[in-house]
Image (cartoon, rainbow, N blue to C red; front, side, top):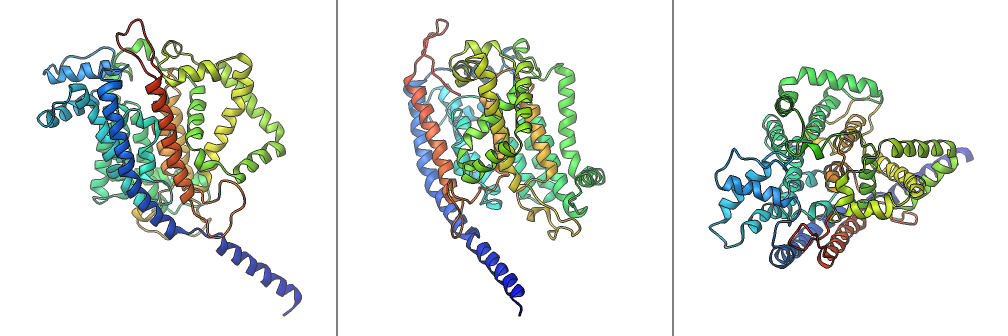
Length: 509
């Protein structure tokens, strides 16, 4: 054997050793994740029970902000006034029907106040149904991606476990629609129809969920098209294959969701607006900066997912290698800030929400910082949003077909098509809203987070030995709990007096 051949063999051997040494310890990571969920959930559930008790007995035993409208409408239903409608309500009656059911189930078992019983609707949904019914099946298919107990602690949702708002069950039903479409627990036919039904029900809690119905429909068609039509590296061809798959299988794959779109179109024609009530204060616009607000929140909540030496260096190298491109992108963001920022009167008038303080102290504190401070922040958050998803997007072979023959065996991943659709859906749901409302970012974050595989590399330094994402999973869970703790302290300690309100006000998201 020649020296050249020996050198080649040695290099190949070194590559094999490195591949083995940097292999992911999947088995231990999955086992640790299962035990962590089993142990953490009852602890967190008990903490949430205590918080719910304190809120309903001493901190907030009265209706709070929009609860006055939601509770009023539910009481009308409880009195049998099914044709009466509160003109200040902007969302359909899904929550009030859930509250009506909850009240009639529990009224014989407890002497709690009506408000507490209605709030229990969201508490049960968030602490029990959300992690165990909705997320657990997806977790079993993507154990390296996320922990159900962590997403149960997602701060933007946790705040509403203790109040009577629409967001918890809106999220539950639309993500259950996704779960049914991905794991097909009742066979393909029935699971898809049930998925569409859950998607339709979710629209009775929040109208914009019709957009996420479209996302789920694309996923259903795509996961069959990539198998039957052999997706490859030719992106445009894959779009054509997706369209062909949809047309050929319209009745089985598209029709269930198409019915939802038709019903929603009928609602728009009848109502002449996507908003039910208070239309003057909820006029759709082109609030493009809202997209950057959303990405900023996503980057903030996902710090344990993206923070690493590798990502930091890659962002800096991108700036060093392409300074002109970077400056042009910053300039583009500044132009968007200048022409597509909407400051709703509610934002500046309501000091019971975090965005009030964010806008006053950070985003809009000065014209200079608004452009030269926030534009680089928006740029970095946009980079994170794309780069963290990139490794989790499916990669296809140029020629060879996918070996998997059943959609249920496909990994919980997006293709370049559904990844594009996810960005479009996020844009469509947040940009038309004139209000800077963090709870509007719940579904964009959840849909983004569910399709990400937790990176296994360490937070800082070079990878050594077998890699695992367990530390990051623990860090993400701890990060959410820490944020929730800070918000609870703020909620408890900061009391605000409003001349128009007889009760003390508090701060929530």
